[in-house]
Amino acid sequence: MTVPGLDIAPMSLADLDMVLDWAAAEGWNPGLDDARAFHAADDRGFFLARVGSEPVAAISVVNHDAGNAFLGLYLCRPDWRGQGIGLATWIHALEHAGTRSVGLDGVAAQEANYAKSGFVRTGASLRHEGFWPAARSPEVRAADAADMPRLIELDAAAGGFGRPAFLNAWLAPDQPERSTRLLQKDGEIVGFATWRTYRDGTKIGPVIAPSTATALELIADIAAERPNGPLIVDLPEANTALRRALEGAGFTVPFATARMYRGTVPQTGPGLQAIATMELG
Image (cartoon, rainbow, N blue to C red; front, side, top):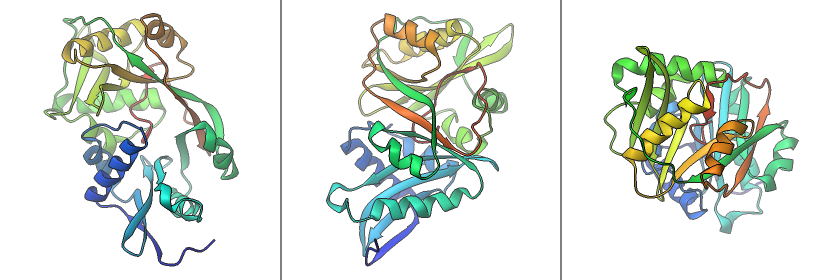
């Protein structure tokens, strides 16, 4: 289906702020300062569809490295659905990934459609929401700029590929709506977790740690930093140990997404306790 006047082009940062407002209206509850870090990950990887001058649909396909990309923020305004705009935007954006493997976290209602484009389900990402007892640890401290290489190294080992552009923005110190806490054992940085302010609550992600106990040590520290409102953590379905711990403490699972890939699936390591974001992986 051809839509007269349809134009699809990379978003500006202001466009991305608008699209995140769309996401909030859909109940996605994005972070208050997500746009800047998202856009820094790949400023050519966010696409806005317009009919004439009217913004109508959006999607992101962020190229993290030479072999891996992640798709998210796939939205079409309700009054423009059913005209082929979403599919046209999807096809256009996927070209940006080239030959890279592409991952996504998709809602169940769209899983069959994603499969038509070659995406295969590999698991799920489960949102957990609740409260954890606050506890400070002498082994947890705020990250600073000198820590970035080590944190990027730990993230790559956990996630199966590097994403330095994203992490240099996501983990940067001295951000008002986001902070990264790192864990040291015997003087070595072994894990970290980033919190960010959501429109409702505090999201923690990623959580990179060598064990469930150390992941909870980081979460407890963030609970002390962010005592008001619920904590929100998105866990890989396979992380049964951390799921049991959080659900045993009363965390609920308000929704889950299908984790799907087109192409080679990254080989994650044992340090991946929770993902950073369902939009960028």
